[in-house]
Image (tube, rainbow, N blue to C red; front, top):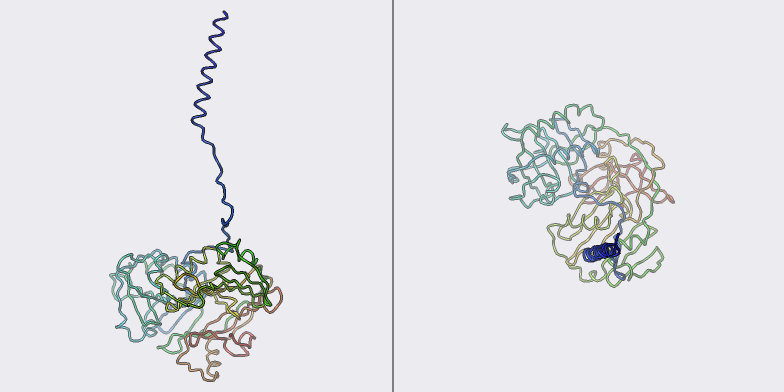
Amino acid sequence: MKYETIKSIVLLILVVFSILLTWMLWTYQPNYDTLKESGNTVEEVSLGETKELSKIVRPERLFLHQGEKHYGTFDSFEIEQTMKELSLWRFSEFEDISELVKNIPSFIYDKNALELIFPDIVPLKEYRSALQLPSNDLPKSNFDRIVIDLEPETREGGVVYFISSKEHEVLRANVSTSYINDFKERYLVDISVNEKYALYEPINRESFPMLRKDSVKIALYNYLPVSLPSEKLRDALFSDPNVVSKNYSSFGEEYTDTTTLMSINNETNTVSYVKTEDVESGATTKSDHLLEKSIDFINSHGGWTDNYRYVGMDESEQVILFRLYDLSGYPIFGDNGVSEILQIWNASGINKYFRSNFMLGSRVEATEIILPSGVSMLEELKKVEDLNLDFLQDLSIGYHMSTDTPNVIDLEPAWYYKYNDEWKMVPSSENGGIKHGLE
């Protein structure tokens, strides 16, 4: 090969390589990692789970009314199955029939009906995410009971009632009859022999409290507590933990910035988070979405550390309450609000947030005891001085949470009654062996 030919080939290779290198430089885009800003950037901290509204706002008990027989249950699985079924139904043509109903209890008891009872009123519009409610023309109403008429007068359509016993409001909605017939065939055929249900009876046909007719075998639990680290609580609740100062108190620890004080009380096992700049003004603004924003606030830091459920709110005072429930479906009551999550809102947002500083860990022991019937507990209530049974709101089994034993959470079942919107333990030596009341 001639020298000139070799030189030409080398020159061609260099030109091609130069063109290729130029193209690579033009088209290359480096994959820079996003740099985290130093200073006020805070990693998101989660104490536990996030949950949707349907898991927090749910019925507490279920009753099947069949003439003179009334079957009831607190069982979480039975109630959840029913709510899953209702979530598939389409509701339409809501109509206010409050003026046609003279007495709500007798209106329900006189029907062959299924009754789902919520702990307190639920805004109908805020429950859209749990049920297929119409987006338009939905009344601005509340309910604490959903009643399914199992034998509607007309065959043209089924009827479901959304009832607020507090406000004496009754809304009637239409559903397909096929929904109700299918539900009856799948869930209500053998309910009389279903051991998850028990026989109940109303105090009278014009009052709500239902009395369990028989004694009940129920578990007593002991759990190991899992503490929520103070630093994790700080990082979850303060917008900028870097500017938060820490101090020790006689009862525990305090964390504060320029606007907020978080107190951790190791004696009561509670956390109090208060916006100090809002305490003096106390300004409140009524919100139509108190329930939704309260759940969103807890979801923002994964605050559902245990099986908490919605149990009540005061819209005028912007107060909302969640309570711990055991896995079988019974409410848990504790001294100093240790089993509750309390929120108070005002014009600028969350004003106070109160909760426990622990969650239930491993169960170390479970034994069974026998609680007397609700009928016999009513007789005990008749002995309570200055208690007018005409104003008795409820009579229910619940658990008393005790943190008296070091490093152990005791859950002991007992009968509770609701009077003047306050839950108290029935004072009886037969009441699960617990003789003290609930403050």
